[in-house]
Length: 368
Image (cartoon, rainbow, N blue to C red; front, side):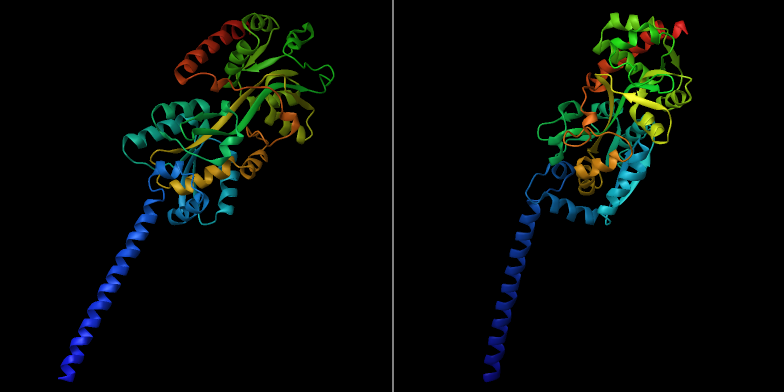
């Protein structure tokens, strides 16, 4: 009788314990699910998340993802910036694919068409970014760093941006100091019309030269462009980097399409060259953003935060690339800039670019 009662009580207590544990399990599961529901899950949710625990959420998510895929068209981004990020976040593997902008567009469009979504973050030139954005490749994202960038270098969305500039290149007057002393060097665009510069100037025939034509039209007008053409300006079918080499040798005494980075690199090596920011300065930019189908959104957003932070931009500037961030850089870079590429939608820009190219041939190339 006693044994039977004991067994009966033991079964009762066992049932109570099982029920208690079951209820506790469901409570814990429900609480965990509720917490999970409060955290970003999709690419859009991660990209636009602004909670107080944002950094913690991104880091925890990035640790699980372990990597992100970075397509870019700039060697400094590939070889230095991405590696600096990897050192700060050693739990994230940065897989970089560097390619020219046109090839990048083709590759990304093919991947999206085949529903093979590999790329997380894209960094390239403004025109290419506009094309990709037109086809819905870029996901709107939020970063607290975007507040430090001017409106001209970002594509604003409802809550964030679709892409944001991370580097700037300046083109203005570069000259050989053995041929031209700094006091006599041109300081304004009007100075370039001085008869003493006739036959001594060259511009590049590449995209930079074509943009220069558009830049002059916008900044100075068609009448000025006609006057400049009468200065017997030579058109060199070379890049801005190659133009800097000709300035170093003295073969080209003066060029208004000289890149600040190229001239500064040569000057740092002892070359007799100088660069002056005739204002407004033609400025081209590189921009970056996260894709709508990013496989690793947490790691991607950590990278975009880093790239656009003061720390990340300092790494960018070590490559003699300038920063569009407003609270960084030297006082010498506080000049008026012309973000020509950002001025027009892609459809209008393509038409304008064709017009500028035609003007270059008509006013400058046919005379050489």
